[in-house]
Image 1 (cartoon, rainbow, N blue to C red):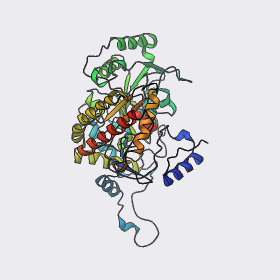
Image 2: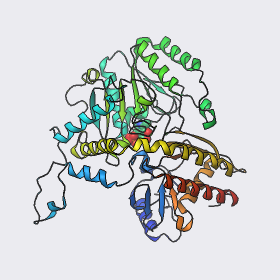
Image 3: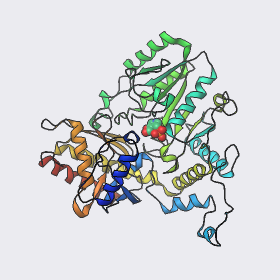
Image 4: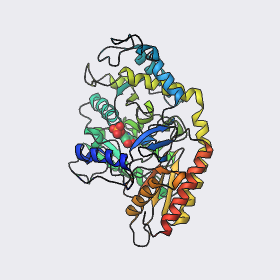
Length: 462
Ligand SMILES: Cc1ncc(COP(=O)(O)O)c(C=O)c1O
């Protein structure tokens, strides 16, 4: 048990924080100094239990790409079940609706979700290998199922390659391919290769050619050591949880080339990037690569827990009846959310809209460097990382925490901004809903600038 975070004058929020602090372990959340208590949300805004309006710069954790509670999405979602106000009329009893759970059975909404998802990946022209969907309920489960499928194809091929500093989840094999070889209890089947970081540490370095020879040499050395034992390679299109590093497409294309040369299965983890974050519906499309498996999650259900692997059916077929089944995979609620999300993306042109937001965010975030609090800006599409600076003896990690807190407290009637705790110690992620209007984007960046300026002037006392 730990002391709960409190803020003066926030009676309702403090009461909620107190319950959580005493009846849930801290392990359930990553540390975020604001510990916001959210009472309601709409579009790109949250309202705290005590009534402060916050721009949401997190979208949950890159989940609510279409904004919070969009009415047209909600309408599509409930219609998939036949939920209408009428079902509550006429007393108690049961309603004749699509079941909320259909374990080991099939619902038509599941078949619709599969077909629409495959249409969506194949419409990119880079989805030739993506012909089958294996559902799951969280991002890490999607990663685990993709790895299971790969490992099942040939028991003599036991080595998994992963890119160093990545994040693929915390559970089981997903945790094993996260991080680096220095982590404790490392799974001996996993070997790491470098992901470019120094070369792309700031927006100003974008567009410069990347020397691939060092990465190619690492791959060659691993191939010399393990040969045909190498089964698969998993990477992210950009290091998300690892601190927001966005490589040029040549890097990912080089990984794919290596995989093809040696019959190694190529898994692209798009749990975070899928559904528009990089500026295209899928990052594999943006990077012009054709992975054997793509893992999807987060934005796939716009707030409903659903994930999955889309990829080669011939490899997935090596798993036998029941080997990838569980209570929640392909449940009707998840399927209905996927259908609603795909339909909404098709109907609304949100990705085109987000193209206009990208330069606004790059300008606004780069301008924060003038405050002295931000050293580097990275990103693409609608996902950015701002790396904090050491300021007059205050380490960057403390600067990041001070910004999160000051943004939560905001500026009177202008409200504040909701950030999650820093990534990689000192990087704050900026990933608002992609449906944010241009005016909301500019206003939120103005507010962020004002808060950072005041914080810098105060000597960092938030
Ligand atoms: C790229 C990537 N893969 C996998 C995961 C794990 O997803 P989950 O937390 O739903 O298990 C995440 C979560 O942040 C992620 O960013």
